[in-house]
Amino acid sequence: MQIIRYSFFGTKELFGSAPSSLLWLRYSSFLVMYPTGISSEVGLIYIALQFIKASEKYCIRMPNKWNYSFDYFYASILVLLVYVPGSPHMYTYMLGQRKKALAKSKTA
Image (cartoon, rainbow, N blue to C red):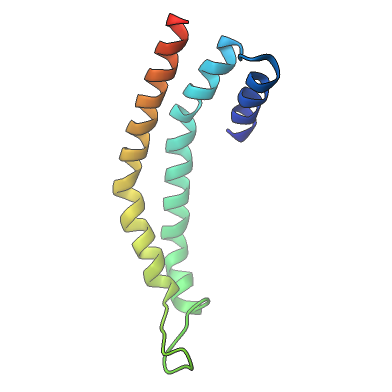
């Protein structure tokens, strides 16, 4: 996705505009890549939860000199709780950006 994005911006900077095919690719590739990326990230975090809990890696327990506690297991669950409902918002935002960009290219 970054290759497409940077090719688009690089071409736009060098030549003042990008070809319509690159514009379409820039604003359409997320249609496949977002669901794939989101589902794999959520799936991997979910699979890793049992190992995170068992290892207690990256956990800080009290008492300590900072009087602070952190549990990576619960932080991972929090990420999942934000990620899952936040994903449709990100996706619909990108659909709106795509609609604006492709509509703008047709009028230009």
